[in-house]
Image (spheres, one colour):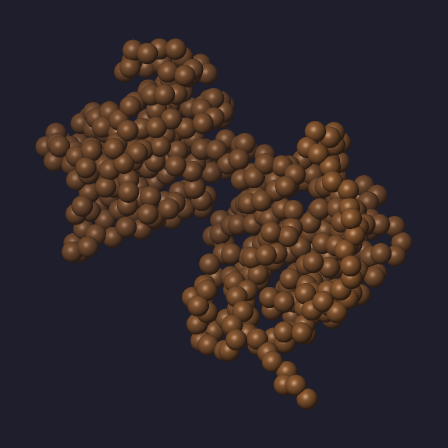
Amino acid sequence: MAKVRTSFICQSCGAVAPRWQGKCEACNAWNSLVEEAPSAGIGALAARNARKGRIFALEGLNGSSPPAPRLLSGMAELDRVTGGGFVPGSVLLIGGEPGIGKSTLLIQVCAAMARRGERVVYISGEEAAAQVRLRAERLGLSDAHVELAAETSVEDVVTTLSHGRTPSLVVIDSIQTMWTETADSTPGTVTQVRGAAQALIRFAKLSGACVILVGHVTKDGQIAGPRVVEHMVDAVASFEGDGSHHFRILRNAKNRFGPTDEIGVFEMTGGGLVEVANPSALFLAGRDGCAPGAAVFAGMEGTRPVLVEIQALVAPSALGTPRRAVVGWDPSRLSMLVAVLEAHGRVKLGQHDIYLNVAGGMKISEPAADLAAAAALVSSLTGAVLPHDMVFFGEVGLSGAVRPVPHANLRLKEAKKLGFARAVAPQGIKDQNSGDKAGLSPARLDDMPLRSIRHIGEAIADIAALGRSVAAPSKTRAAVS
């Protein structure tokens, strides 16, 4: 009898190794190899049932296709992230840390759709049906006709959903707890997650039901399991937040039916998640406009303008290697910005500890925050208090030049709506919109006075001039020479 050979599959990246080893050579993850039978899985099942292929019709790009219909979830912030609502037959993967509110959000969506007469099914693989009922009762949703079950077998789930009226929405909480008979491994492994996801995606495409898969995350914040699942689904969203803050952000990373990088903002209350229609007002609440080291950044999250406060603290260091601590921004970008300020702005930061924080727990990734972060650093170093009604945005290059950023009008409209009267922006923004080529005189964009700058040195000089009114001249000249 032939010996049954096994393989070892990495649970982080899906790489296959012929023998067990402590470290995966593909992704360098430790203790991530799990032994699995090579005869199991979707590929083995297809090999046993191999058949001759068939000829199918090919179409061109010039055909007309009707727009994808949308199914509103009942929550405007979630509809914004999905691109206008759920698309029938689509599959959405939502990840997030434990206790962040994924199940709370989805049970509220299920209740809102069920009250409109839609058939909604909630499959829980982690909690018993009684536990889900207790959560719904606490949120005041027990009157909604949501069909509930606690099941982990994918074959049983698909067979049950195929009977009766096709559901409009199916929630699987979570995909790591599901298992399929086509894979001979424990639930949560790469083979099982991939096989279960493929079976549920096939059901969604054939039936037209929208399926939401809840995914666990690793300690790095990435969705656990094989990366191929994120490629298989139609949309990927991450539910972010901090336990010390009461708001949550649903961030879109992939969407085949709408724009990416959209965000939806929710506030966690005793009655569940509440939508935040104006997140800028939430992030700027309680702002101290009389303290140095604080600058308001007019940013963009997808198509939505968001204003946040960037706080900086620059203090002399007693250590040989000054400390750099960043919350809510890229640490490597802070290092680059500090180097540019020292090289092209003559700002002496090498012997200072630097602490940078995005107020409210917001995470910023766009380069347009460079100018606001630089203004906060110089303000803290010189003791200058920036005007409370001024916003900043612009990308700072390695040469010290301030580069234009897109969507200037949207940023300024949001700032004006919240009571801001002045803005500091790159020179190209003024040239493109106001037609003024003079250079340094303030221009107006969207009925707001605009200070256009070409180089980071101009912003440093303006802030240093403000600092002379509140600090000793010798201190200011020593900080910014």
